[in-house]
Image 1 (cartoon, rainbow, N blue to C red):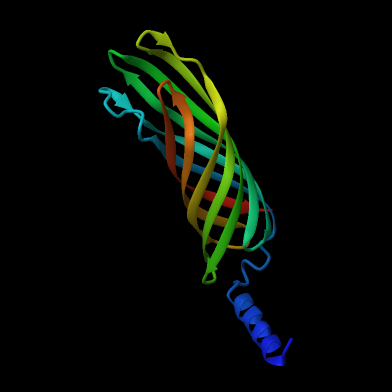
Image 2: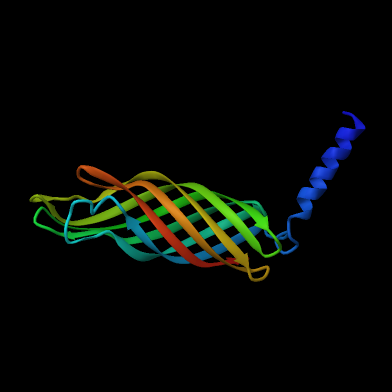
Length: 192
């Protein structure tokens, strides 16, 4: 390897490291997050009168940051009641929740701010109560991928606040249609 390539590599490494803020330099270890947000299943209520497809619920995560840019989280998300209809053809209420596992990549922007994305896997359960065209609807469970994108603001070395959008694919099944569930969550993270 030529000297110019060595110098260029060293320069690039030093430049990259200079963008990692000192507050985040020690951001490895366990963390606990609590968020609260609004979720919505957009397709369920198409062509149905007297139908509601959104609710609010909590999200709790336990995570580990390997370094300031990469971590993992295991979590629980309650979507609340994502389908509630009292129509002639559908009298049904559906509540959903999920256990999630995800990898998170973070890009620090400045000393206190960061942008992050996640990709993961969710094991969901839906509890159905009611009937569609006289047929009782059974509870459903399954597996689905999900992703999220958000921003966080570090208050100090232990605490951060964050806002995140998440999208779950084909979360649950009302006969004849599956639906994606989107959520917007806000909350706090505590680092051990």
